[in-house]
Image 1 (spheres, rainbow, N blue to C red):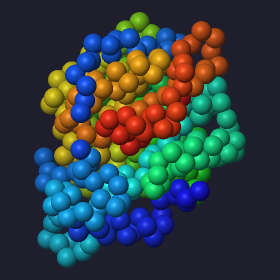
Image 2 (image 1 turned 30 degrees about the vertical axis):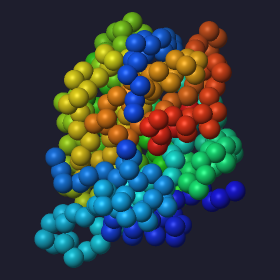
Image 3 (image 1 turned 90 degrees about the horizontal axis):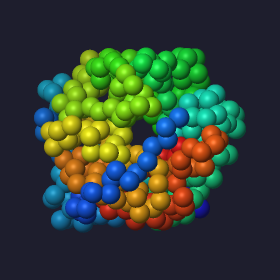
Image 4 (image 1 turned 180 degrees about the horizontal axis):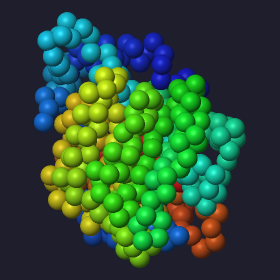
Amino acid sequence: MKKHHWYPLLAAAVMFVCMSATAVADSRATMVDAIQKNDSVSRFSPLFPNALYWQHAHDSTVLAETLVATVHDEQNANEPPASFSRLQSELLNNDVVALYGKPGARNMGILGQYTIEEIEPVMDEFVRAYDEANGIRGVIPAVYIIYGTVWPEGEIGLTREAVIQEYIEFAHERGWYVFIDHQIGRYSVENAVQTLLPWLKYPNVHLAIDPEWRTDKPMQEIGYVTGDELNMAQQMIQDYIVENNLPGRRMLVFHQFKPKMIANRNAVRSDFERVKLIHCADGFGNPGQKINAYRFNALAENIPLKSFKLFLKPTIEKAGWDQPLMSPEEVLSLDPRPYLIMYQ
């Protein structure tokens, strides 16, 4: 089995090529509402999806279409932009597989069903399955932590900082990513992102927001965010990274399983130099339902980086899950290919 961590020399080689070098959705979106949910402007031009595989970096046609050459300011004009291109090259050559949930909460995802000491062998099983299914690409493990949890009337409860810190350090030692997710509740997107920003000081941390729970009536109605709010969130993250001289690019993930969850989706930008926006197809159901929901998300070509979420059998009686669960091979055959796959 090939090595699945992301620090090897191959990543460095790809990073060099990416610095020198430079993406169809089915229109049938009517079945999107069949997906259920559990009731309980910058100069940078993304590589994706033109250059999906490592060997494509050697193709002169792809190189011409995906040139990445940016001088950020006079001071670093002569310095190699390694920290800027690292995330790009990692996503170019790896699939990210994440376990989702709230630490210590057994009913809130697979991550909550195991202690931090128990999660590594569980993660290894998922990583091994994707490592066998994705050809020459590697796999980057990740934990996807619900940090801001919506409460009745849209209030937000935050996971203790010591718990988040423990997972960040645990993940960093193993070369894993950490996604820190905020459910927004009755508050603004700006407020949620502002709460998340300080975690970016850790280089393996990425952020996420979940529009479903942006409401003061959780479990009664599905919330939404606007395209302008997603752009604002990206700008906030980029500004924070620059102002604090933090390394690299970071991902911002947002979830969608119904059209109403993203208002004015065509206005969403994906051209921030320091932020990679990831569009996640959420919701449980049978494979046909999930594929149709993914196709609806794929229509948003202005957001080229896609993600796919799968639901394992839950611990809560009568809660929904994917029946049957799609295999890694089926997930990776989605068009466009998802770069981030998560399991709840």
